[in-house]
Image (cartoon, rainbow, N blue to C red; front, side, top):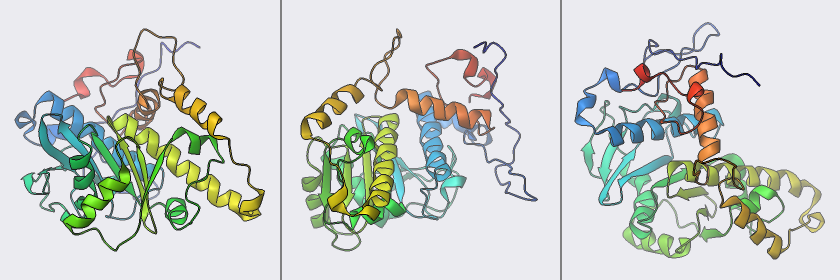
Length: 309
């Protein structure tokens, strides 16, 4: 296929405060750092802010949002216990690179971003527990998606009945004890999560997906949500009629997936979730979202240099 004429459809001039009117959607740009004093951020932080804000938009686009609730956090670097989180009060469709709040492990605000909304400390408890207990984890996503919440209320947990359920690998479970607000439960939560699993089901509550990168976290989230959707639909025929995949096959799927989608014939080294996430960023950019994503793949499909801050 000739792709020489393909260019991203970017539009930096959309108003940050525009809304859906008259049947036409005016898009809030993700990379809005030109509208603030972006010089106070390093290039690495600017890229991270754009990438996390884009992740919030993806969650919204897939219909997994919960009005202004739930959170996604990202660790700034391995040597700093500083994190980015959404300002409490914005919907996921409104989150931008400049609006993200920088907090420490205790949820104290280090940089309020471009709003005056601040951070929901109670909502940050789950994230701070995981970041503290699993320091290798960069990104933590917590959702209350309908099918995920439904599976969280099933005593059987997530069943190995779909390829997506096998892709997520080991699943951890944490029993519901009310809203997570105390240090004691934080310790129980990280104990239940364990040292290696990348997904966790909070009983009678929702889903958690983790990753050593933002791309990896979204990979586990997407497959976890899809596995829950399949299970909710399949249970209509009764659990006794479901075919569960043998354990040895589960292991084979995991081994293949850990090679970046089964491996690619390319000189590039692709991590888990990289290819899928980059494709989704192209989708957003071609629709005018201006993600600011630092593409590794096809140069013809990446944003023009002048759109980067």
